[in-house]
Amino acid sequence: MPRRSPHPSPEADLLDRDLGAAIRRFRTDLGLSQHALAARLSLSGQQLQKYESGANRVSASTLYRITRELDQPVTAFFPAPGGPDGLEALLGTPEGRALSRGFSRIHDMAQRRALGVIVEGLARNA
Image 1 (cartoon, rainbow, N blue to C red):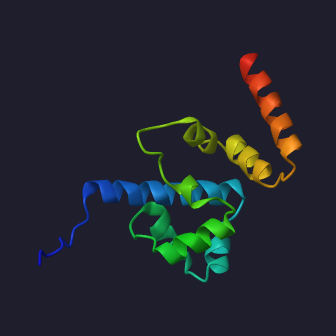
Image 2 (image 1 turned 90 degrees about the vertical axis):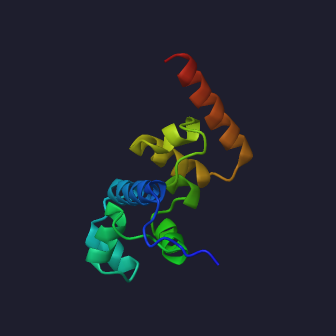
């Protein structure tokens, strides 16, 4: 049986740093301090700091709890395959993330379609 390397690949390190940066970005968008989010997650502030810097890897269960506290889908924390797309661009700004959070709370399909028409109209006139 092949032995696993004790050192993660450079791609894994980059992904850990990107994940940590996303956690920090969503946390600050909500106006939460590291201490406040750490307390909500039953983590130490130091542990959250290590997650945000990419120094420590985030377990699946911890990531799930983080996504719930930050009101984001897990996919918002990872880059889209094949490079940037509209979703990544949307979630890359505080305004886009606010729009996404608000949209997810609209359950009336007619209102969702109307919002889509407004956004498309604004984009055409930009």
